[in-house]
Length: 311
Image (tube, rainbow, N blue to C red; front, side, top):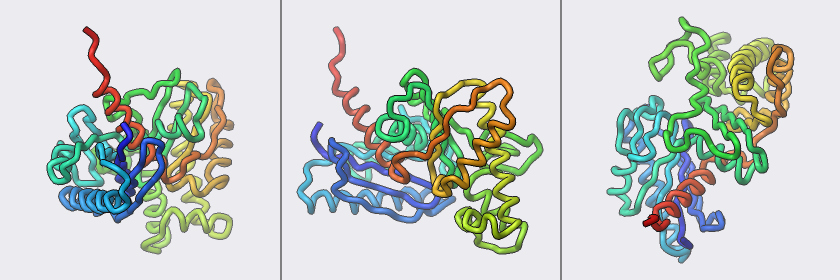
């Protein structure tokens, strides 16, 4: 398989896409805004970005496009190419792979975004050589990938690692998934921005703004601290149960660096009584983890499909 794969990462803010060779060299890259809440508009945006990449590949003479790998959030049936639920995108039991494949004329494979981002970090990023690894991605949502003995857990089921939907307050805020008190409502980038805006009336504040104001704005300090308390509470449960040797933290919030990682570790060390707190490191692939992971998972699937059946 020497052709090009189109790899897309559908996030809560942007849709990123790259055309990647078998050696993961990008021959083209595009990005567009995600039209949240409108399932048809999201499909149109993905298709339009893919059509642009197909044109870029043809213009560059980079070779045939073998497949499109699309990494999406939510509960994903990867085998059937359907999104069972992605509340932020307006999808419920949507045959995404079939709809996009019919429009593009290229095979489309669907992946869970955080699962493949964790796969990329394990193979090429901050998790290389670590057999028991937890990758946590903090962005518009919160999710995780668990690798045990070098194998990604739940890769085929498409819904493992929904850390953001672990309830921490049973009568808490109503989440888009239908549950109440989900971690995502307290420790995601969106939640941090919303909490600051609610406390100050400064509509439009983002988690990046809050991080920038740390140490100079007491409200920002408190909002940030509350989010870290919630995140550390859930991570302590995961670490106690599964004992990973390294935690990799990625996603948009990870751009805060030590302002996130240092107090997070301090909270875990202050509260852990049974668990051994593992090393906590930033993701190595940054914002490209989802795209690179989508390419890796797509090529893995293509190789499996071409493998001869034992007789």
